[in-house]
Image (cartoon, rainbow, N blue to C red; front, side, top):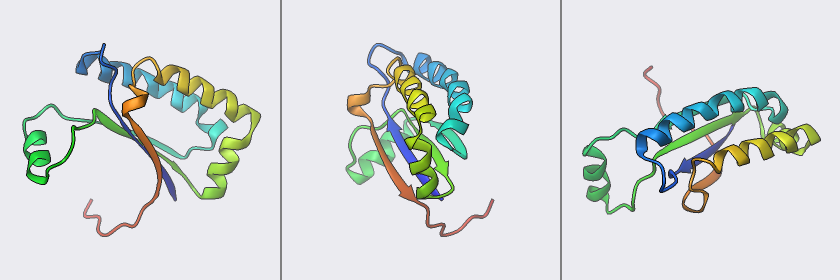
Length: 123
């Protein structure tokens, strides 16, 4: 499977709680357009407000943290390309981006494609 990973930072005018609430409200739109973009799975992971985040980052000399990550899965690169190439998908992607602009600081966020290599899963 191919996975899009979107590490995001909230807009400066939103509190962390307002950001999380608004981000969760984005979920139904993603569900609505999932077939148009051929997405198979969508997960939001919201950063937990704990001092342990600073301890972990400081212990590794890491940069400022993110407010969370979004993961979107496709069955293959071909499905991803097909899901991004249709007229229906163009409208869906436009709607997603317009909505994201309302709560994500796009200039300080990052998106990339990955391929998973599971090492273990004790779930």
